[in-house]
Length: 206
Image 1 (cartoon, helix red, strand yellow):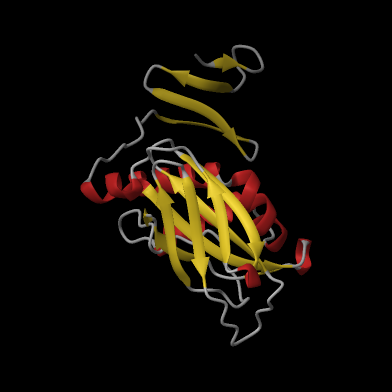
Image 2: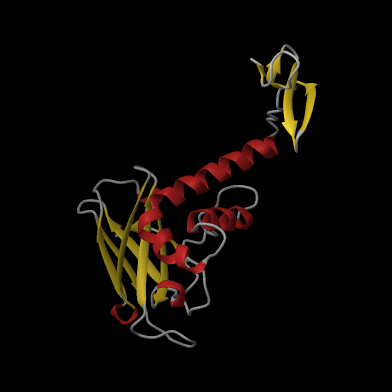
């Protein structure tokens, strides 16, 4: 419904029949009403699905990862938005766990030896062999993130680099193929923090 802003001879604001009235930079105008397009091509549907999955993952690690390791290192946007935009560009065309970055930066990372899951006990073991060749330190904090697609949640725990193992306890009886793991290093706090690119590993049965 349109509104008369200054009496019957004043400008309109809103929709009347097949036209829309509004004001732009102090100029009153009327234009035809057009129903916005909602294309459903294969490419556009794929992109929407990918974007939705990235947003879902961002929500699962918002407090534990994005607010801690992304927010302090970006400006002009939130860590949440940076995570989404970064991973949307990396994935072409479909959502892809193997290229997703849970963390990104210039600190030396760490290759994962294996991430094992015991279905009967819910025990997760994330193992690596410390091998520092660049700017890494044995005291760096290593964080393991496990995405659980059975329950749409993520589990997080951390140890130092020289521990060479992170243990987590998650629900029992999960589908091991639906568990995706990441490991990354970090050092410092706030804007002075250094972070490594995360490494992906498919979780396997112990």
